[in-house]
Length: 111
Image (cartoon, rainbow, N blue to C red; front, side):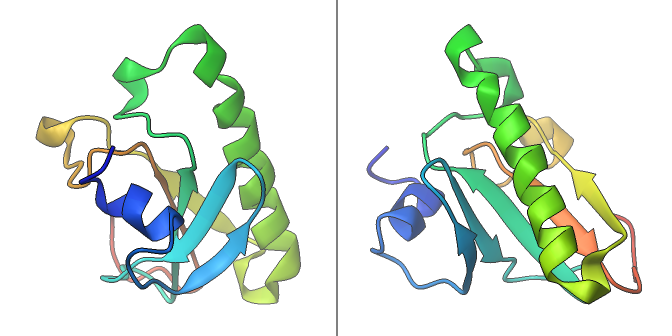
């Protein structure tokens, strides 16, 4: 999607604080963090939300969980963490590109 903020970040067209990346997943720091560690785990393929996932897209769920585990092992302060998904605008999804919030550290609020 040409106008998608996350697609632009993944393509390097918009600035972000990249935390990690592999062939399928991109991780950035959230611009409005709700915890000391607040990252967005984003599939590189544009998928609008959970409802828009097709059968071929479900492997991203495993890729996202693998990345969460990787982050928790690589960052000592993130050994305990929360994962949160908003799916659809009425559920609080602001950017219409599937993403998972990874929060850790002393949690200072509820997502």
